[in-house]
Image (cartoon, rainbow, N blue to C red; front, side, top):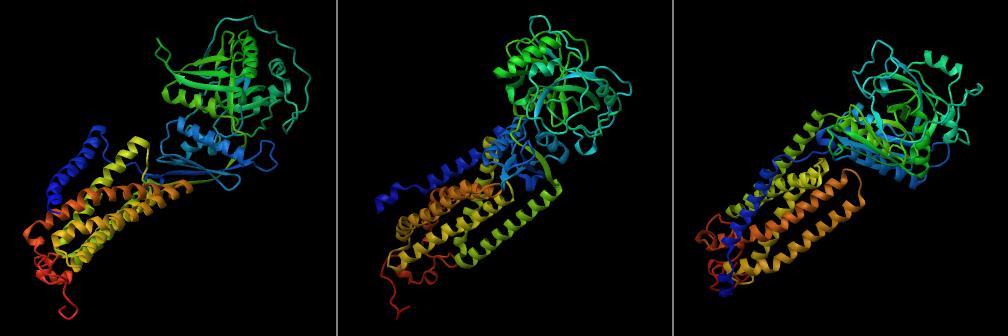
Length: 551
């Protein structure tokens, strides 16, 4: 035992442990981040509930289609750089989107556009007046007071040379406009050859952006863009499902952002034929509109044929607008239609109040543990207090660094998991101390009991922490939403507790046990003979445990 004690260097262990703690703060300084990421309930933000229905408007919703739609919406939100967003299914037809630090109008603009994506040719452009208030995605944007054929700043399609344009067919006879989706949509060539009737032109002149209009793929469509310009569009030439890929970037040797667009085989055939036709037209009939949820997202003009199904849309893009358009093109077509059922806002001030309340609750819990440990363990409570301080000192930078590394956002349930770690750390010391007391009562000296008690207590501590860790892992896998934050934080703090008990609590107990005051059971040390239930001689290893009569 003596040889083993000489090999164990608790002071060195404590120094290495404190250096590791300091290195965590060094990493925070290197990353220049000092505060953790906060979740929706603490940081403020918006939750939107989308209710699904089939495109036809009837029938049940398959779980496969709902999950596919959820994945697309998640990709759309993530692709726009919205961090810490949660997109989950709820029930058999709802999708819940929660995004911290984002207000209602901005989030609706990102995920509220959930209808079918389509490409249509432009026939007329005019000023359409103010946009509907409930769907206005660009607050403060106002159209020009002067009508114009082409809105300013529209992007253009960069294309290559190709065959000459197709001739324009004469206007078809006027037919009543359908109000429901036809069973057989027009072919892309029929859509290209379509021209507006006199009735279409007359209705377009009186139609304004605040008016409703039924979108049918085989019929003309009136729509507005985000600046208040209205468009007379032809039937759908290319459905959004034919978009194979889209991206945004700055080409080599250029300085401006562009959006790249790739079609599948069917889309390539239709796009080549359409740009062949558009390249022979004059403004605005050389434009095609990208329409999503009844809104014109972009209306690039075409000056040359685009063969091969690859296009590059250029114009007055910045990084944000280019990525937005690319993600609309890439993730715009959903297998289901959606309505926004509810929008709930959590203000940053409310989140701040919740955070302050949680911190106050944690401080109260910590204070109660400290008071109890002083009352029961006397001066030995320094180990409990120091261990709790180390738990806080390690947990904080770990949570901050996890937010920076993997995007972990601390929410209110997660904060509850961190506060719960106060009890876990205190429990580990209680297990160790009671094991030391049992060893002393069995006749071992205090210094020997500190070591033998640890050998027996550490397995109990490990088993206890492993049960907590297993519970956290299972809860994290099976739970959804903010409950996963509780499970994740509980798991992290449980691992931290193991590290603290093995590399701080135990060495500190050994160091104190080697001092005269604690090692000889000084008054109010928490290790006095009376507190341990033995005589001083027994505590010092000179005789066996007191008999019942002696006690």
